[in-house]
Image 1: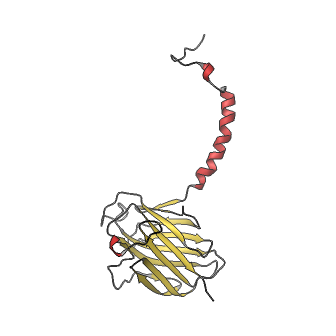
Image 2 (image 1 turned 30 degrees about the vertical axis):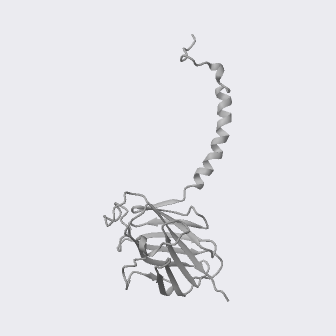
Image 3 (image 1 turned 60 degrees about the vertical axis):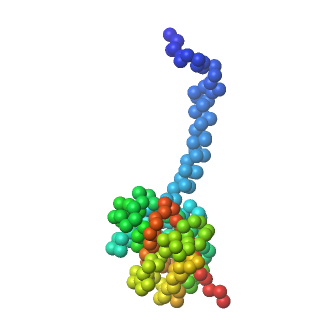
Length: 212
């Protein structure tokens, strides 16, 4: 008994028999899977996601919600002594000054743990915030390293004794007077504030090597 076909459909239109079709599609699936695996570079913690998609380093972990008692902790591995950029996105609704973890509230206590896998010592380490990639974050955009606080007590590093902040024409935080040897990890604590929260912004990380 012949199985009825939908009106206007003919099996003669098929270019492949089912067996041939499977043999044609399966190799394509194996080509697709590695490409999908390579894109898994996003880590979610609290109300934010963190990505190493711009290259040059690797995120190895993310945790916390972004409060002073439970900061956002990002662990990374840098394989060179050149600047790299961490992409930060709101993973939940944006609500300025809302409850940390439930919404992207623009108040982010951060801890960055960085493994120096560059084979060179770092003698300084600088962070820079950007609302638009490769463009300076100006004073009036609301994004900064807590620029309203003139005497911050939440900026600290395990390997550097001092820091400097600059808010114009860049939002930069420079750690100095210390060193991170190859295969050692440095920890950096600081507060990011964004009083006009955006869906996406960037944190440039620049390890400095001896010049002499």
